[in-house]
Each structure stands twice: as C-alpha cells, then as structure tokens.
Image (cartoon, rainbow, N blue to C red; front, top):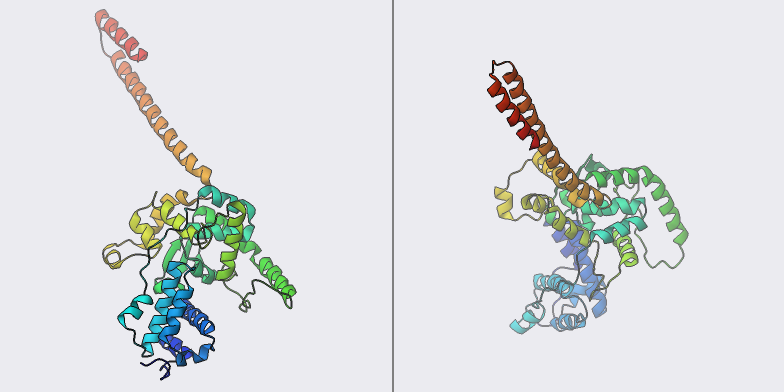
Length: 373
C-alpha cells in the first residue's frame, strides 16, 4: 500500500469489536485500545481517525521515540501496532519489518521479594492491605485477576478464577493458606465501612486536582477487594517505597507482580512443581494432557505445604522444624520405653520358672548390665 493513499479497512472500534468476537478477553481488548490511543496521540490524530493515517514512516518514528522505555513494553506496543497495520493492508519491506519487530535481550530488572520486606509491609498497612498481600502470596494470582475476583468466587479456602478474568482465559481454582483466610475474614468484616469511607473521600476530591483519578465504583460493588487494578499497584508501590524503595532501570525493583514470583519460589519448597505451575495456570499442553490430579488432591497437597507461604506466621516454619525434632525425640523415647517394658516382661517370665542358684546369679548380672546401658 502506498503511504497515505488508501484508508485502512478497520477503524479502531470495528477492529476491537472483531477482537471481542474472536473471544479475546476484555482486559486484552482494553490493552489494545490503550496502545492504539497512545499511538494516535503520538501522531496527533483522533483515535477514530487512526486508520486513515497508517504511515510506516510514522510507525518507525514511534519506535524510535521509545528508546528510553523498557524493551518488553516496546515489543508489546509495536506488536499490537504492527498487527493493526497489517490487518489494514499495510505492507512492510524486510528492513521496515525488522525495525518494528526488534529483537530484545531479556533483562531481569528486579530482585526477589524477601520475606522480611513483606513482613515490614504488613506491619505498615491496614486491614485491607494485609488481606490483599496475603491473598496474592497465598494464591499466586495476577493483580489483574485479583482486582476482578468477586465475593461469590470465594468458598472457604477455595477461590475460583473465572475464565473471563484470567489471562488467556485460563481459569481454575487456587487456595488460601490459613493465614490468608484469617486476614480475609477480618477484611470482610470491615469491607462495608471501607467502601463507605473510600466513597466519601472520593466525593471530597471531586472538583479538586486528583493525581490518581479513579473510575466510578460499580453499583453494588461485589469485587472482593473493592478496588481497581491500578489502585492495587499504588497500594503495593507506596508500601514498598516505605520499607525498601530500591529502583531499577524502569521501575521499582519489586512490584506487585513480585508476589506471584514469591509464590512460585516458596511454594516449590514444599509442594510438587506440577501443583505449583498448575495453581499458577502456566501449564503447557503436555502438563494439561498428562498431569492428572483431582481438586481434592490439589487441596490436600497445598494445605500440607502451605507454611512455606506464611508471611506473619513465619515463626510457624521454625515451629515445624522444632516439632519434627521433638517427634524424633519422642520416637526414641518410645523405643527406649518399649525396651524397658520388654526387659520387665522377660524378668517376670523368669520369676515363674524354676531356676538354680547359678541361673539366678547369671540373670542378676545380666540385668545389672542392661540397666547400665
């Protein structure tokens, strides 16, 4: 297609509608809209007119403008835009295609979220924050999924991740540790008051400059934590800044996604890897074909190893090792008592037998030797 001569076939709204019909998730579609809006702002046209301005030269300029952005974010944005260009009939030559599909070197621009850091964050936050942090660590859920979990999705220690809120529609069940369940119970008792106070605060901000404007709360809000995805990020970021705050190249060294990584690392210490990846819903096609565990088996295995995911109950891990040591000591004591009992039974049997003085002397010496041991 010659640059600027023929409008594209799909305006943005039509394109996103087609994605919806193709069963892409609402979150994916919203992500596409955000990237396309950013590009429209870059070239200075309304979003509804972007299909009339699909110039490869502009896309190359956009790619160059992201030199200070993360490689991963740039790759995602260019992938979305390249696809939109292509679906609208724009052709790239080899050099242009390579420029808008750059190879990236994966950077690990973060560090592990430490237990001590989490404990300090739990100390500084409120009931809502403690329930949220312990939930993320216990379940390994993505923040975007967690923001969309409803009260009705939680049954006891079991949480259902609905396919429509899950990445790639890979829903499933995840579980709460006893610790996370306790914090959640406390939060649920205070949830109504939290919503009332939060709504009153938002009304007070109306008409004032608000650096973090929030979308209106859904009527009769049934979301478990009653906040948006962006609000979750802000809660985590504020707490992390207070207890650590170390910055990487593009963002803080630990983000809310670090809770998911914490789950992966620590759960694997006490649970089978198949169970861990299954709970994270990252199983490949072979795992889904060959790994067969019932929900009851998954729950039992999770509960058996849940202490690895405790935050404020970290002392339980120490207690677990102490209990193991005490159990070994008790077993040794039981064995010693059994030996003594066996000796007494032998002596009692011998007392009933007719023995010569020589036999009695030999037995007495044997008993003395046994008692010395």
